[in-house]
Length: 174
Image (cartoon, rainbow, N blue to C red; front, top):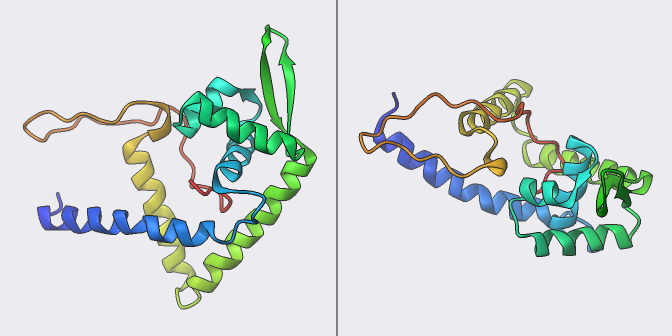
């Protein structure tokens, strides 16, 4: 087990990741804020879904999700179709225009990361990807459930993700 000071340093480093995410968000086009990019990315990753599932994956209130969905739908990036099982609900799916935008965002993210990490070796970037995926896996599907609660003695039970965890796509702003 790592020393307590190593966990404290890890906490500081993870907190600083917010600054990296904010810098990456600056490359998004003005008409596609981070919330919109997150909606598109999740629909691409998980396929069509109801708005309630999207709100769960975004880990935000339904009213916030509704605003994001309206924004992307107004621009033609997603389609909203009646749910055959419940005509009051809508099924959201990525449109061809949304896929094209995601491709553009992915290229922007990839180019930005490549520029920022140009002094890193391929092996170092690969190690970072592996370690970040492992970190996410250790916490499970953070967006789909409540945070872990640990016993008072500091022990923790073995954790498995609720869904398979893969490294985030370059277009993932969240």
